[in-house]
Image (cartoon, rainbow, N blue to C red; front, side):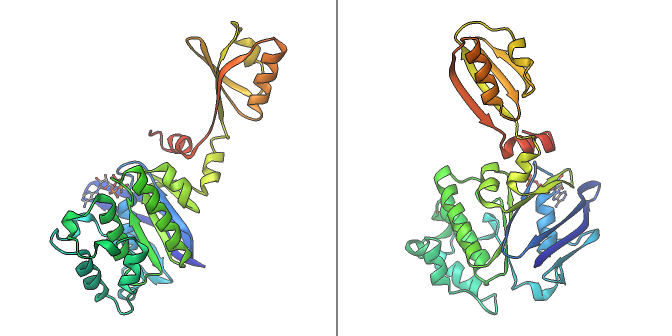
Length: 297
Ligand SMILES: Nc1ncnc2c1ncn2[C@@H]1O[C@H](COP(=O)(O)OP(=O)(O)OP(=O)(O)O)[C@@H](O)[C@H]1O
């Protein structure tokens, strides 16, 4: 079942075109990622979906109703930006206060437990660590028992450990049947969590696929690096159909190619009595796909 349908969305701020033409649909129960370089139009897109902004053109429906419809307020949970909470409010006060905004709120104590906030109920927001603030903002996004949660820059500013803990939380939230829309800069995050990803670049859709599907678009390129035991001619390897490129880095050789590249290269070396020392093999990643699609590192 489609829960969010975005069709030919466009939005500008004065002269700045933030979103030129974006279309995608999100299915119930999926973790859907929105990925793109800075200023690509990701936040504007999710703000239009959550009804915080009105599109200039195009249409957005959420559970069959137009985005911004009052009836959707209790259906969509949006992660708050940190600055929207006062430093003095305690975790408990924030949870209690926000649960009064919704007709059918979640049990905030259970939510605090699930998100590891139970020991922090009396702590003031201003005294929480980055990870704890983030978990509170996720809790507040879920407090209304939403069917859809929109999380923008979920783990920005978190250390790797806190980021991993947050990923586990997100998987847990999906398991409760919540559809998740995730805006992220982190490839590893998108690769780990998302069922499908739309890559937005300069306000338009550059690609929409599963993480594996996006990686496949790079042609499943592989990169082998090694130091040959004796000097070799480039042609020995460049004649192989699997090899696309050969580069030399001092005594080391880097070969880029596709197919069964490792087998092809190692076989030729073996036939010529050459040993490949310090051999490493890298496969394409979502990072490579992103760079190929957007031209940005
Ligand atoms: N309120 C605003 N007023 C004017 N211009 C804006 C406003 N919000 C965003 N923009 C501009 O619109 C473009 C898209 O911004 P948006 O925040 O949607 O991108 P983003 O992909 O979320 O970027 P980031 O990853 O940096 O958060 C940018 O050029 C941005 O400067």
